[in-house]
Amino acid sequence: MSFLPLGLSDELLSAVVDSGYTEPTDIQRGAIPLILMGKDVVGVAQTGTGKTASFVLPMIDILAQGRSRARMPRSLIIAPTRELAMQVAENFEKYGKNHRLTMALLIGGVGFAEQNKLLEKGVDVLIATPGRLLDQFERGNILLSGVDILVIDEADRMLDMGFIPDVEKICSLLGRNRQTLLFSATMAPPIKKLADKFMDSPRQIEVARQSSANANIEQALVEVSPRSKRSTLTKMLSAPDVKSAIVFCNRKKDIKDLVADLKSAGLRPGQIHGDMEQRDRMATMEAFKSDEVNILVASDVAARGLDIKGVSHVFNYDVPFNAEDYVHRIGRTGRAGATGKAFTFATKSDHELVQDIEKLIKTRIPRLGDTPVEDVRKTEADKTEGQEPAGEKDAARAPRGRRTRGKSAVDKKPDAASKAEAVSDTPNSHNEPAAEDRSGADAESAPRRRRPAAAKAPQQEKPRARDSSSSASESPPRRTHEDDAEEATLADDASPDWNGPVPGFLSR
Image (tube, rainbow, N blue to C red):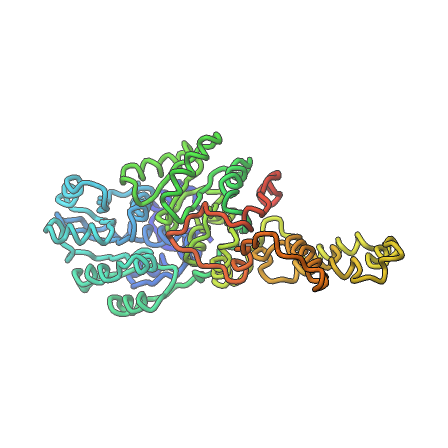
């Protein structure tokens, strides 16, 4: 299906074609005709499904008739972050190039003087974050009674950031005869309450559940120790098929160090996080879009809503604290029908966070280098097929006088096949101590259990320190924002680093 049956004007269709789009997405097919008819619309769709264009396109045609007045915008779009507001503005510039609509962007980090000049002239489209909009209203620089179309974008993010009271206040300042459009990835109770209070019999369009990851994204969990994370990331980012990538970190303090390491490895990274000045963030985004830098190391400020075309890979350097953020992070790739790959680095202490994500998305994230359980068992069976059983072989080789003393070798140490099966059948085996470590512990403890009481000698050795990896595997602590990602346990140090060639999963 093309855009033609949706009822858009020829000028707008021409701009859409020039932008490289030929078919509408599901949310666009459902929302555009209803918006053109003047209906209130609630759009529920996951990130990366074309939500922005689903309201920008019909708004351009609706606003083509009429003219703006000083300090009285004709339409208002509220976005939770500066980056999202800027993205909406870019969409209006791209699709509205054949129309003569005026636009103003009210976001923090930008001086009031330039914004006030635009407001004085009058604008057709006002795009704003809640805080800056209320600030300008209280200063008397803007009147909201003339707004004909209100858009509340990323309502679930508004809820997460505590902006719902501000949104309710803004809605109360608008005139009653308006069209209201609300878009969100979820319909949490506070969002439904907002819609019921300020919308008139809205039509709801739901094309995907927020808890589902995009089917075009190939996911994998990379099991690492804390000390090997940076070297592993550098190697994977150096793979030939990584054209452009976003790397997400939980802590802003890690971003600067990671960018420095990647630069020293000859890569082209940039950074974006909440502590940066707005002009610096805008410059980084422009450099990323123009391929001046091809790796964007970011905090969650960039996780939701940013529509950056052509991102081939997403790397979660840290497992996100909130499971919902995982879906939004990896949604930066695999957009507009393209395919993408998402890798999440996980240490043993991330066990609970990974479980939360897998519970949300209702599937197990494949582990990088996974071998199906059936293949493991078949391989071990092939190795032992036609061979003498290990117990008989050991008994035949043992000296005649030792056959009747104590336990045989097969009793003391399990064979390779039973070890592999035990590991394969253990849920979340990536968080358990390695089979080799457990068998080694048994071998050390066995002689002490067999020693006769009369032969015991005074203990000369110092008591061994308790192995922290054991308690960690039984009840792994939930990570907090204050945790230091570089702290390694003894068990983590013993974990093998990913040090081989780029796996086929990455390059195929």
